[in-house]
Image (cartoon, rainbow over all chains, first blue to last red):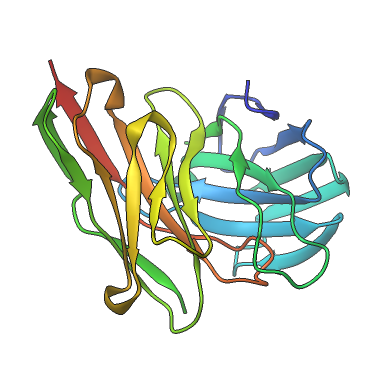
Amino acid sequence: ETGVTQTPRHLVMGMTNKKSLKCEQHLGHNAMYWYKQSAKKPLELMFVYNFKEQTENNSVPSRFSPECPNSSHLFLHLHTLQPEDSALYLCASSQEAQTSGRDTGELFFGEGSRLTVL
Amino acid sequence: AQSVSQHNHHVILSEAASLELGCNYSYGGTVNLFWYVQYPGQHLQLLLKYFSGDPLVKGIKGFEAEFIKSKFSFNLRKPSVQWSDTAEYFCAVNAPYSWGKFQFGAGTQVVVTP
């Protein structure tokens, strides 16, 4: 049990489908993230939300659309994906300092959603 | 932009052997440094972290890492590995005040044979 729960764990979709990934954190953290993990590549930061506000969009194509209705929930809406988008999508949360401070919190990860785009 | 380089993509060693995984980063300023581990079928979890102070950091499960500022390195070590240390290991960096924007290395797959 990580405190960060992702659903579904596995998803297969066609290029014309619309689906969503869900993440919920039970840790009381104020920041949530989406990362993409592809084989033999570094984890790629996609989106960052602090206090429900998006603070980072790391040049992610618009076919990925994040939503953060509150500080405990994060969604990734998927639309007209490409086969190269197949990957493990990881959600993470952390407790960030509310003022400028060095001690940024560690990331707590979910187990990921394995996405296959046909 | 920050980048993180892990020297080995795949390491195979026997139980009781010593392990050292290299990590170098490129960033001109002060950084926070982390090692994460992903056991087969499990989520990424923190092994250890360095923010400041003693450059030799001890983490869970007998792991330690040494921050060498002059070499921009944060190598992970374990004197004697066990079969249960089979996992993928990721080095990560972020800058202070960065609101958690971590830069990860590509990972090193470690296989420990009985």
